[in-house]
Length: 362
Ligand SMILES: [Fe+2]
Image (cartoon, rainbow, N blue to C red):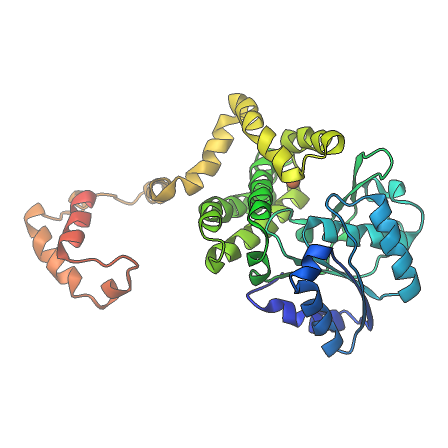
């Protein structure tokens, strides 16, 4: 994961490190219009990499999109595939890679670990904060005829590099921010309560939840808030890693048919079902959700968490337990205010504030 504003400009260099001289960029018309595709192409060209673009990916990519991209790949013989865009572009890049590297048709790769031959290296440049496709090995490709969504997963289909450039996510329409954000939140929540969850997946789910839950409202309020955008993008990628190590749950199972039958976009379908699944699961596994919420239960939850650790370590938690006299508190507060370090506190603290804090700890 390469993370930071403007990192898309490192695309050429990173592709060069993977030994590529010819690249196929997989993207969609919206990303071309936003200028992101050209910026990626320019970075590749600067590194001396011959590049062609497949820009006809659609929402919920189908086998038809994959086949069209595949035909272009066959003409151009790329040594690397680059997916620039949302989950659709990244998944379509994976789909093209399955067929280009291994032959056959998309249906042959439905399931897990169906790729036999080595696959081309790929780089992901997500422009939304949502699917987490950049950090997991599944491509969701719909059968163009039956509309059945096929999850095709294989470790070999993982991107070698994910370039997380939060500036790219600023341009997405508000509706996309909302839909992809709900999806990312769902990924954090669903992966946190699967039967297959592991200490590794839980770490990613928890971190994803913290980043997403704290910042989703912020990006909805202020789409230009780059700090919040950064957190959302990182959170979505961590949620992708959580999926990779834990899988998803009932919300996704319920959402996919809604998309297949009624064309309801993924994030919308997820948003419809997630609250019900949480209530359903919560009746049995409420404690698990509660654990997760503790992490974001604002400062209270975090404070309790730390206090518990302090207690568990056998340390006293009250000033009075340590022989401090209440009458000395004003003096202590005055001294504390003179300490060099107090100026670095994010919230300005004066003597009454410091006294109040002591009193609470008493
Ligand atoms: Fe999802």
